[in-house]
Image (tube, rainbow, N blue to C red; front, side):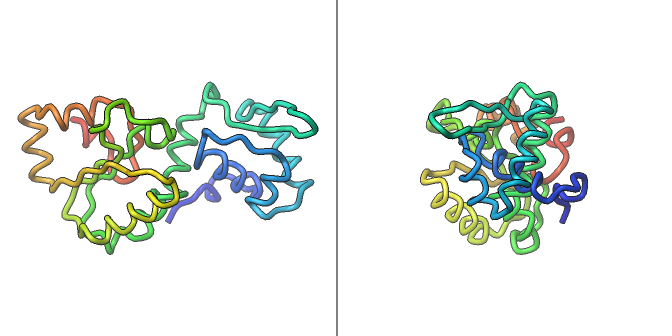
Length: 194
């Protein structure tokens, strides 16, 4: 399986990026980052300075602590978020268990789900899965992620035939899913929406 280590050589930087991009709503102080990623404090400080000077992180002093968080206006923020979605959390679990899940054609996370923003409407879909899926296996992965996040994940599973039929008929439910922002976990985005 591909991971960020394929393109980024610093192990500490990878861990920091995965930490920040797995939940972009969180702010961390230096010692909190050290505890989370289990690396030397000096290496963490060095990488935080590099990431901040590159424009990926912002920092702010609060009391005697310096807090960091990701900048969503960074040029490659969405690209890094997409990569982190595939290598951490539920995305990584789906990749790791792809064979157990059946014949998976596409897995799409909504942009709001990845950014941990609340759904606009209660019936909005967080995850779309297309293929011949072993539902109990997928449900188990989803339940584990729900317990980590402390909230329900709304997901939809469709066979390839049902997906193609609904897309051809311009089904409002499917059109609503495909019209929002998305991060592709498995499959080609162009093939999914064309």
